[in-house]
Amino acid sequence: MPKIVDHDAQRVKFAEAAMSLIARNGLEGVTMRAVAAEAGLSYGSLFHYFTSKDELLMHAIRHSTSLQTQRANEYTHRYSGLKALEHLLCDDAIINDSSRDSWMVWLTFLYKVALQPSFAEMHAELIDGWLGRIRTLLEDAQQSGDIEDDVNVDFEALAVWTYSAGIGQMGLVYPALLPAAMQKELISAYLDKLRVQ
Image (cartoon, rainbow, N blue to C red):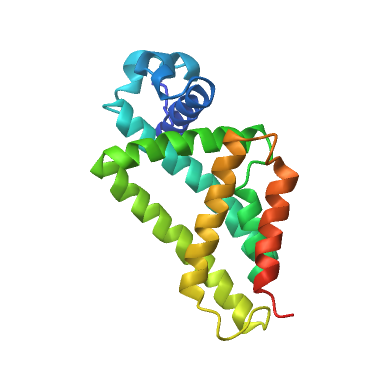
């Protein structure tokens, strides 16, 4: 009887292997052969799914953001408004080794975004979704009376996104200055300024 291969699971294994290598060694440490070895799968099988390192990196980013979306959905089911947004932003901060690795992969992706149109298009799509989620939570907060009616939700969504992205990036570069607790404190302090006093 022929062996049944779960192709989605294989793609995930390769994506996670690429992410692990990037987190440890940076993009220069990622070769197709190294990814296959890290995944414990054959070098030849990798090319059944990805024709290039760029294609593999794009899939790894989609996999990472999919996991984050699942967590974000849990927060919005359990909380609403600013509370949900606080959980969402704290999830995006560097709070453990796993989130640090995710930021390493994301910064590698941003390097490609700055240089290649295909990566820039993908980034724009992902950020549109992220901004839309932030905007929705701010609108919920407005409707519940947590923030004032005259707050410009579009402007604040952009401000919150850039602020939290900066915290994550600087937390990666300056972990002693911005440990997890400080990152969370900065996020909470910003959202507190939006609350109706």
